[in-house]
Length: 202
Length: 371
Image 1: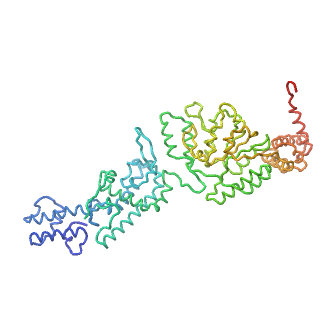
Image 2: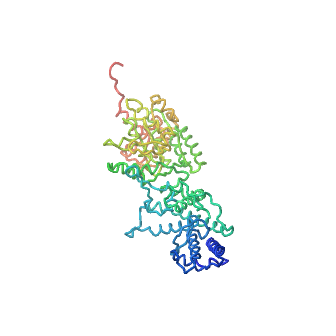
Image 3: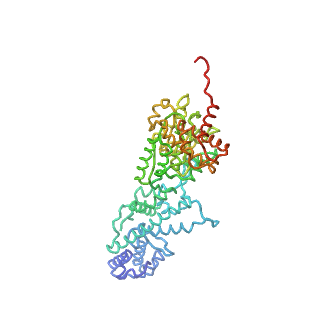
């Protein structure tokens, strides 16, 4: 979704649509004039002060709305973060991004199965795993190599990873299914379902 | 819109608050779907195999890795070889399955005077048949009886019947416990003990044959020390060979001990065994034993291809006055005598000749001093 004047259309009901409409309503209440939707798109490209002609008040409202949108999840309206998805910038909160990020990390892992010499990798140190995958791998699945001063290097062999793969794929499938359910609930109820812990709501 | 609520827990997970939130959610998903995922996880942990019914984990693979890593600078090639071999065989090993009923009956015919022991084997086999994985175990068994009644031969036959590895330890010639539990790797001639060696196979069990237990109970350093732990199930699950220094589950090792004089065996050790006193076979039992010994020799020896498969009844009857141990020697001598007379089967005369020759070779000991 891009920040355009179409966010002011009546059918734009998502969190960004709500922000855009609240912005237009606040401007109208303040100045008595109608808000120019094109300012929103312009403010998303240029955030400097006084970027547009004479109406600095409208520009200020537009900039504030864009700033709010850039930290609001497009799906659920929770606090989000700008993330790149196939070259497109999307704002997603952590729960809405999790399934996608996890699946992407799995694909990334698959693409790094060969080492720099083009040979299949035999060892996978913990640090070579993307963050979410690393966090999801059960602690007793790691092999441990004791190092000096009590440090332990955790790693997996290619064979371990091969055996672990069905588990990782199953987890990714569960995450995608849960994410879909969550989105459905959001569409039907108009708000994210209550999360299980306070950490998950952002 | 809700504000971000980052607890100290999420802060520890990652410096990135957003990533920490994702990790918390990921872990919560994993714990919610614990059962569904655990089925897949069981077979993946540490690359270890799933423990199916009829298998058991002999040792912890991490313990082997740590032991291997511990002497990186002070490399002991023999020890490294032992550990690598154990790793290659895997931590999860098979357990014994009950012997075939036919084999048990065959043993009953070959060793008729061992009927109480065979009955115990039958009962344990029946129990194994109704348990998942058909795990066959026997309690430590102590066979006592006069020399030559076939105690050792019975144990060896039972091991063949079970199809598990066997390790025979002659305690009469053993001078220290390291034969059973290994000697410390700091010794130059250090090596693993019989228990560890026995378990270096695809099985987590085996038959440990402790011959002449009564001869090992005397002296200042009896070699039977490790047996106290090994024969007690709770301590056997944590048995550690002194050389390898890795705990193994030796509780599935089936110990068979033989002795001539049971009174020489310490009470504490005797209490760990199921005791069986093996009587001298009766003359009618001896006929079966003689036939069984002949069949075994016929199978193993080169002359088996020339001589008939079965022993004549008349010949077998001549052997009823001997002990089972003597039978084997007499049969060999009788076969040779028959061959010298250009015959291809044993006759009673051959047995008589063999008995006479034996008496001549070992005349009665002359006593020294006043009688």
